[in-house]
Image (cartoon, rainbow, N blue to C red; front, side, top):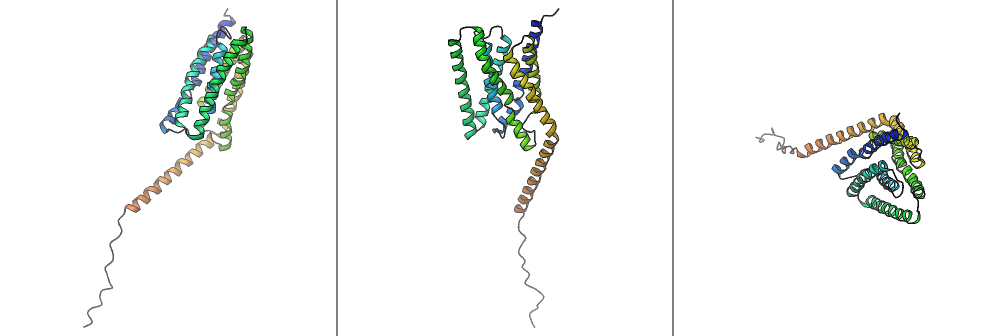
Length: 261
């Protein structure tokens, strides 16, 4: 008979796969950002929050904090590197207040995780206590990662458009949350269950908004395309008109008057 630990490990491996898909799902978005050299209305919050979440779970899964958590460390270590790439691209392609905000958030996150690690490893002397302290903070920020798209959901409701809420990201988030919730429930881990259980609810909310506003988004984008085509046509007409030479002057002074003889 297959043991619970074997099933849990298998689900954890699947969870690693779904989490990797989740981490890589914004790649098309960042390819577009890089090509345009502009972040447009995309929010940095989901990526900054996910970076902090990954750093916290790497700390939680360290052998000095919570032994036998290799699957947690591997996927969150990978996710941390991926999110660092996204944040770096966001900084490079933004400007002004947006860039300063992202840089400050990133610096604050790194300082916080380093300080927390130093305090926990210095002041807590058992795995149970270290796991509890880091786990509680990880739950808080893990919930923040899954709740970060609420800012995007607010934009969707305000604009009645899902243009800036990629469907694939929402689907990947749902699959990842389901896997890690199952992983945590087999050998109950409260600290992993809470943020991932909430992640399921937030992802379902995003999919609900997508279903609600998808048709309206298509109409908005089509209207924008028609408007752009009309403006392009008008510009061509104006250009052609300005390039047309003026008619020659009329030298006819009335004619037919004769010489009066």
